[in-house]
Length: 265
Image (cartoon, rainbow, N blue to C red; front, side, top):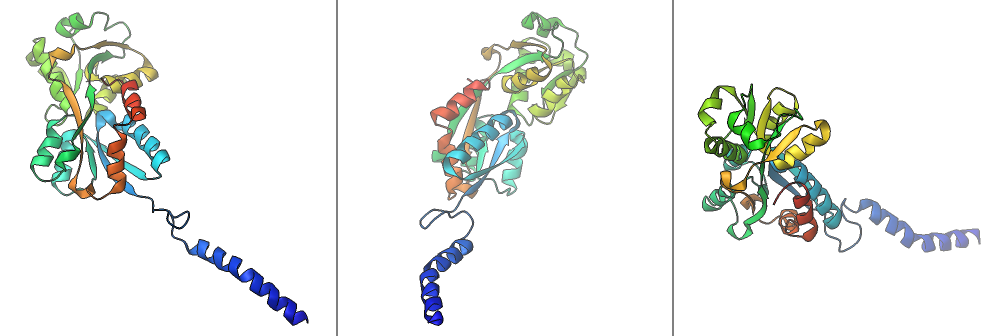
């Protein structure tokens, strides 16, 4: 009789035991039958947009469950890495010419091109009293050291060169320029005091000012070519649902509000 009772208990427990075993063996990323696995994409991001990109990646991850990894450098350096086979799925550039060039070279998907932001340059100094009349300071001040991103690598650096040419200071300031490999490094030169002032992305200066204050002036947009920032799906990510989904999310109202809140038009 005792054997019969034990036998009946085992028969009743068997389905539950099998279910538990199945759950333990279920691959990571599957919560239940029919749930797709978590997708992952690697996004190459221009340095000026790095913090915003991380915020957007977090927002998108919470919404989709997909994972976004961010790699940051100047647009020029990212372009070179993509040309040499770096496994990026999406490029968020600081210009619109680099994504177009990648499309023309067969390394990106033409239909995915999207202008996600328009950048603005500001004159910024840690000295709260320096930039009281921005145009006058830019035209006349005898800067010790002046920071911009390398114009050969960074679109914001190219725009800064155009601004200095516009006010007639490019040649005079050549010996005093400190060139950042990207705008993040150029901003750090001013933040650390190694440069007295610089022409930098408004988005990065907003963050730096929260740390140290200082004085700033928004450069007129018509003093340089528009800094139109484009995104593109790279061929490496053309079949990646996380990459495709992230690009679609850039057009979402929540994402657009986040971008605007960080200093972009």
